[in-house]
Length: 289
Image (cartoon, rainbow, N blue to C red; front, side, top):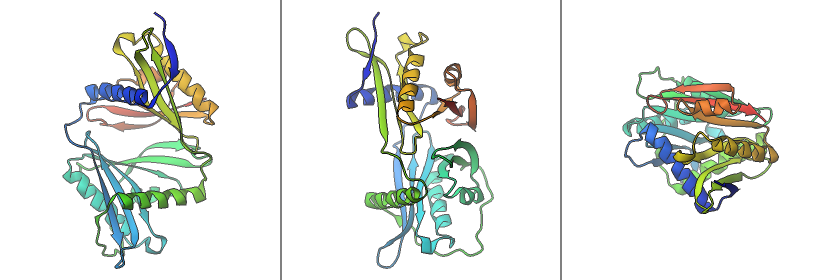
């Protein structure tokens, strides 16, 4: 049988991502709940945005807290602590057992440490000369809460999509003063089709502005697995990310597919997260290109 690897259209990418999600869900068994996003903000009497954060809740009952931002004049006064506690409260009400955050070495790792977040993974040289951390906190277990010596009283309320855009813009702008991005996100995708043009495998990934890498989806139709097609796709993705400026591949594997990545040279495990998804283990891995 003759196969051909060719570029993807937007519809192709959506199909490959859907098939990857279906394969993941067949093992991880997500709950039938809607994914939600919440925006929390603090404003002054004139409605000016002083700080805020975004909470995303997924169907695995895990929460992601991101774009936490406080204006410089209001930092170290308890506003960030109030925001993260409100996000955690909402996450618990949504039934989440785990909260996840990502932060860079110039951002807020110490802040998250104080609030009970544990380091699970460190990515080095993304951006060059810096580190990125993934931290998590169990929300279904009692933890000692960090108490500030001087805490302000802040009215935290729900924000709108425009507030989320402002928060994201402020954080992205600040990050760029420390580590300017070299380029916009580069989307990479390929599909393998049979002699009838039907997609039987593919990948979707990319290279961010700091030359960090993503594998959003990699999928092979079940009847074609264990024939080297997945390795062929991964090798092509590695070739393309290297061509676009990345020299290290970072991936997140799970206990049911970690062997595939180890077989393809991902020997360095930089972090692990137990019980994610529930009953499984996630491995953070990297490979030098």
